Length: 79
Image 1 (cartoon, rainbow, N blue to C red):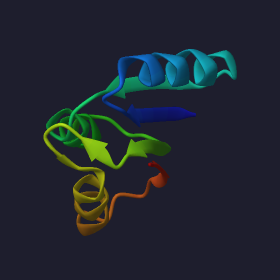
Image 2: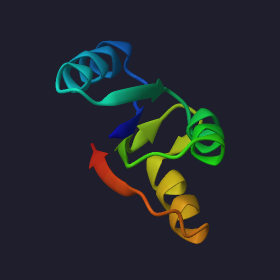
Image 3: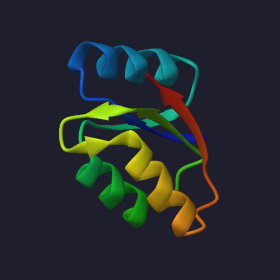
Image 4: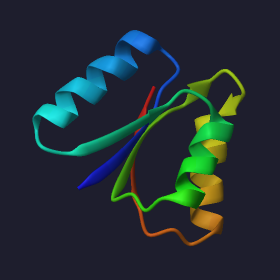
């Protein structure tokens, strides 16, 4: 299973990456809306762990773009 973690807090982002990887998942991490959208366009993910408060936009913007493009990916929102 391949996950994308979108979180701007480096401590939380790194903790999620280490914890999820320890469960056997492949984890990519980004900290900005633009980087998340680029990752979603270039790679296939099974799920996204998405922070709502990002420095360059709202995590809901990422969710709206994912749904508008009919991407088949689950999303877990962190607040």
